[in-house]
Length: 263
Image 1 (cartoon, rainbow, N blue to C red):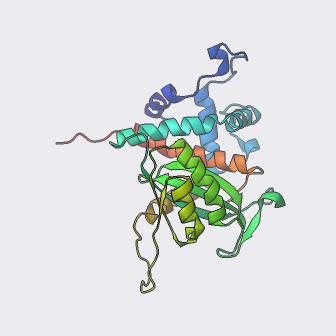
Image 2 (cartoon, one colour):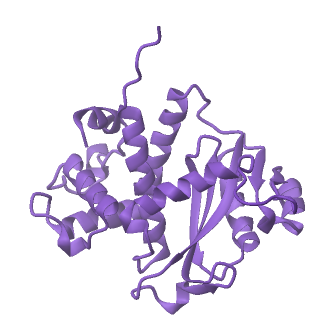
Image 3 (cartoon, rainbow, N blue to C red):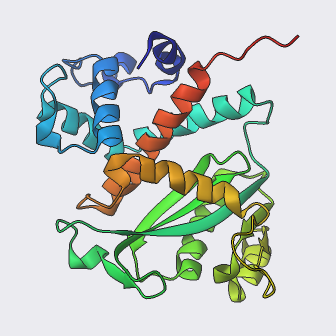
């Protein structure tokens, strides 16, 4: 991280338990070194054991990653950054609209059969990333499943989580894969309007569909993060954590970027 990024990040970090008087020992390495190591791993797609020597030892970095994953600290940190990015863009911290979609990616050999599947539509053997983003393309929620899990099945769980966390959310755009009973379920159970954006039959070639390009841009960012070019994680929770770290990388750069003064 640059000094400008660290100045933005430092006030938003979760406070360790030992500083709150809740027990535990002070950490041996500073948070900035740990964050830099995880960001390096996610951005460059290296193995944990291939961590360069100028970072803390790889097992200490992995223990930090695992603790933040299991205690949901990475999502808490991510959400604080997202709220700050929205406020910097002149938006309210709580979104009122979003977009849902999924992405199937190939899985590495370490991914077990219990969380691996075959997506017949995309012809991909691996996992599927189900995401909901706001209208700025920032991540609201993510769920990683086997690739043979249908979009509607995952959306029942994912949209319930999003509606519970974001009470002002009222409208969700989706593609044709989310039609059927899901539309009525969202309206009656979650008080969400699920609006299907379909591609008409007379369209030829590439056509920019309203709102759906927003989530496709997020998928493009994830694929540029080398650790996410395919799924290398044994656990789906680790795969979800990697996606949060990728978005943290993007948002800290946005927040540290200075805007030119308006004339």
